[in-house]
Image (cartoon, rainbow, N blue to C red; front, top):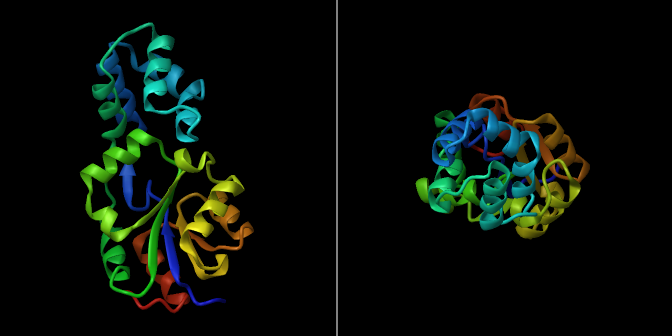
Length: 205
């Protein structure tokens, strides 16, 4: 096993918890439509996925949702309603803080959209300090577990794939990272993460 020089964290359910139901409720209130309409037009019809893969930017995402719902409403309130769905996964934060004291690079590798990313970076500015590198699906135009996003992530670190450790809560994303040559493990808890880091001779905890 290569010495780990860089650690990537998934964002959702690892660093931050989130609720799609909160997003549905908030968008419904802003748009003046039912929760069922939001579920249908945003999630069932793949609109959110198109936004997360960068096929649509925020202006286009708003315009398409307005067209589908036959409504007209403020884009800024809409994007806040979409983005304000996160809260810290508290047990992970001490691990991140300890890692930041080591001579190891850190980054976020996430399937996310522009509204979510912008909101999170404004709400939790410390994340920019902990994670100077961010690889997002909307920028990479590729969503985990597609291989392209891992290629982008590897290139951004400046180290070998085998020198990267990645943690994600979805097994299929972890397996895809391994297929790309990255060392990876499924996130189940902060305690398990500490054990996984210890196995790789990363002195935290």
